[in-house]
Amino acid sequence: MMRSRTSTAQPADQPGRPGRRWRSLLTLLVGKAVRLVSRLSHHGGSALPGKVVERIDPGFLARTLSELPRGVVLVSGTNGKTTTTRMVASMLESLGLKVFTNPTGSNFTRGVVSALVSTLGLSGRLHADIAVLELDEAYAVHFVRQVKPRYALLLNVMRDQLDRFGEIDTTARLLGQVAQATTGTVVLNREDPRIARLAAQTPARTGVAYFGLSDDLLTYFPTDDDMHASDRDADGAGAISASRPVRPGHRLPAEVTLERVMDHRAAFRLDGRLLETDLRLEGVYNLYNAAAALALVRVILEDKEPDDAALMDALSKVTPAFGRGEVITYQGAPVELVLVKNPMGFRLALSSFDPVGQDTMIAIRDEYADGRDMSWLWDVDFTSLRDTGVAMVSGTRAFDMALRLAYDQVPTDAIETDLDRALTAFLEVHPGRPKRIYCTYTSMLRLRSALGRITSVDDAGVGA
Image (tube, rainbow, N blue to C red; front, side, top):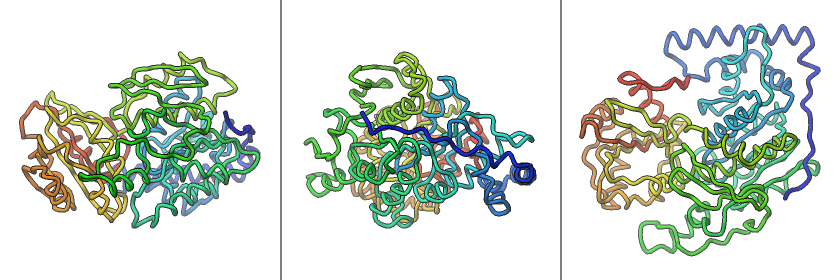
């Protein structure tokens, strides 16, 4: 099924030196002090302790993670990093491993360091078997210069935040550096041609495995090339072509393929066996992320060889990551947050959820974490919202979003750039009726924070 894998242990002797141990402990104490002050003052968000620690002790991250007996897993790509990382970490824990992860989606190196500061006890030792870490495509390159991952999962490449990354091939080159640095096995999306080609960049002793789709599902999950080809060929506003796309890597042997998608249920093929399971995750796009997670978990646990029932049971227990199909209850009614940050993600989200019977809000901001260039909104087809309309449009780019909706003849009831005022007004529309908010990353953080002041919201450990 894949190129032979080689287990490569992480060096564990250097952290034991007394001088380095004391330095790590002092660094940890400083980090915890910064974290406490940050939380008490409600200033700085989740990454501030990591930023300080990186400045005073650049080797802290590598020294701490080098102690893990099963090494480090790195998950990156344009779409699905946070949810897939959560899936992998949750499944590994269900299957008996102790896992360290960065669960809030703070996916820069300083976010990983902050998660370490929060997790470590005063002994300074990380009590885990393995680390499963989500890294932003650009910061993954900085990470692998310090820590060589034993496993890497590379999901996809889409036109996301072009103001940061430039051309889409630049993003692929960044992920190629991750593949080159991986010492054990790289798991690749065979359906994304830019990702599948990274197999050629892995070292000779590094294994390569793939996840993929059945023939029937190719049109459900367009690559960046598919979407832009359909935009050129479509009669309407960017509808995906019904013809089967051409994928050069589609016939590569896959560790796991997604075979069928149903409502909160999916079928996967593993080594010729067809397995089904229920899922708690929202959105059809997360079913493909589940195939990626399954492929990676199987590679990591090849020595333990969990049976099919155990794998499906572990997958069925995974809950949505914060802001990624997360449902928050307000006055007895569900308020669902759906993160959208690029054309494919927004298109798949719109196709996953029926707007009938729901009030819809769209919140678009253009802070650095969102990407400044919002031209990608014109690559999304919003016609599915024509009949129901959008109750509220908000965020710093609210008027751009409203204009885009107008071009697709989607009625907009209200526009309010201030997110807090917009949320209050939106919640007052049809009290007790289910609500769904499509939001960019910083919009999601602020909306969660605002909802947390009026109803119960799980603590994700992030600032607004």
